[in-house]
Length: 148
Image 1 (cartoon, rainbow, N blue to C red):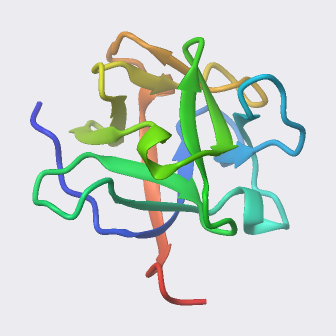
Image 2 (image 1 turned 30 degrees about the horizontal axis):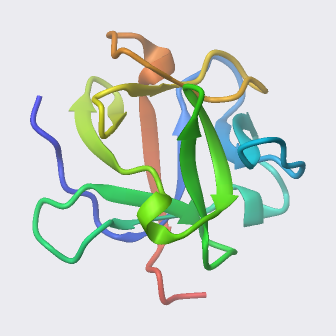
């Protein structure tokens, strides 16, 4: 399917996992490539669960970067087929496109691999896309980038 445009803004990214709502969450403890990114229950402190989605470049059709809303330079990176958040230059951030699928969106990296949430608490993986609900996400637009 062709990529769909996403309105730049601050989002909560919901994983389609059976049970209570699960959100993409930056963990607190960094390891080799940064802090692992997991799916977890709604956290009372939203700073690890709100993400800015914005075009990587200011040109139409540009892929998107995703970074923590509470931090100016911490964004999503991919290493060893897993998702991390790290303080890196904008050029080093992973770039993503979004495709509409039944029930939500599929998030794909530059190589066409899909983000997959195996289960709550597991680190998000990057895998060849399949029609599985663990690769389906809902983007909840919370507010604009310049709004508090």
